[in-house]
Image (cartoon, rainbow, N blue to C red; front, side, top):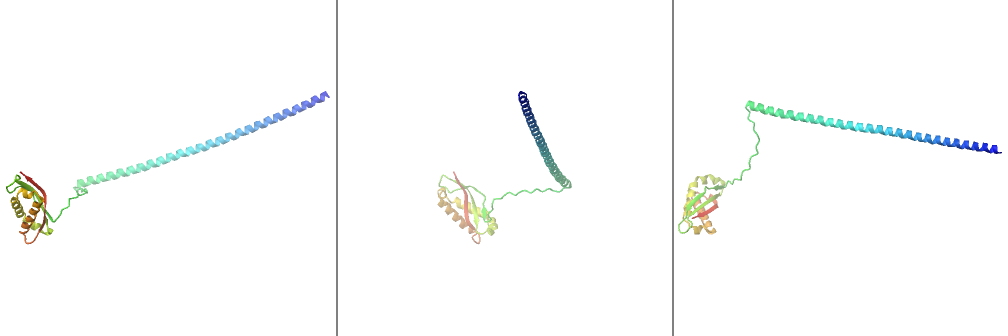
Length: 213
């Protein structure tokens, strides 16, 4: 009976050992299989990334080459165009042709065709009776019609004599106020228009009125 028990115990021990060996072998196979799959996946990712980065680099190089090519073409066109213009200018100069450049004209001040500006009257002597003995003035004549301009210009010397003679008859006290200037203006209009067949001078403008001792 003792021998039988010993035999059974050995049999049980052998079965347990066999099961442990089978379990260890199965775990090893699982681990090996997992590692193999990991290696395959890693290699695949590495290959894909290499292809991606290689394609991106190739794309960048291609785009840079296209941009450089376009820049060279544009620069060449500009160079040849400038050379052509310079050559044409030299040919025109050699053949004696005049090169005309467009210049923007300056804006001129407006000209009123019905206004005649007389030359300045300088140091006209006033009538005695005051401390201010001299007067200098500028004045302009407004015409009734611009067609009278030629006729009035023809009588300018006579008009200047009328103005000088009338001022010499007045004193500083008469001319210093606005009333005196208005009186002078209407007296001059009357005398100046009297030398024409019709009224040609409509108004007089004093642009400077300076009295001196």
